[in-house]
Length: 177
Ligand code: GDP
Ligand code: MG
Image (tube, rainbow, N blue to C red; front, top):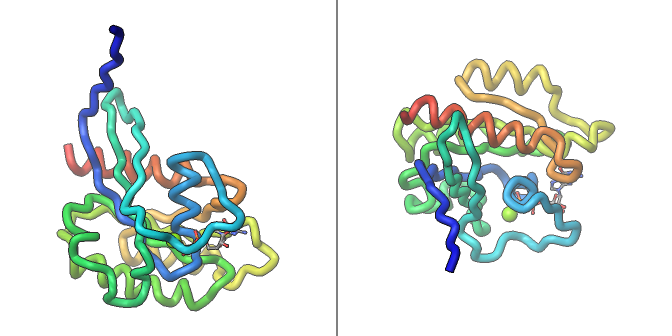
């Protein structure tokens, strides 16, 4: 019998947060399965997905948690945040309100996790640029003020999705080791 042993050096828990319908689940399935599902229902039950990546010769398993309809303010449970080393805070560039709510999400994150958590702010649906309601510069400014990484992505086309997750994971590695 031949068995392949995969060495895992670290497991990092990462949480996805942000308003409903901004594309959290699609970003996650793009990153973990390189897939986009056009008629996806809202998230049901699945707690997390994983992808194993190599960063500077270390093998890191990213365990990425997705909200299961807990997107209302203060509805996310403590178990969801427990042990998280990274967070992806997502808004929709075509939905002003979802960006306005980012302040709350970041505040909640800072209340519920320890200070060293690495946060990536993501403006998703960048493919819908003709419907844009949130200027890139404004998000860049906000991210700088708050000490967050920032990226605009499209889960639909895949643009910048890998880069955003890799940057987050790499930075967790830099902080945690
Ligand atoms: P969630 O509630 O934040 O998990 O959002 P979903 O991942 O379920 O996505 C909500 C809706 O937005 C779905 O209809 C998706 O097909 C759509 N969507 C998600 N990401 C994108 C994207 O990058 N571009 C476009 N055009 N639509 C997207
Ligand atoms: Mg979802």
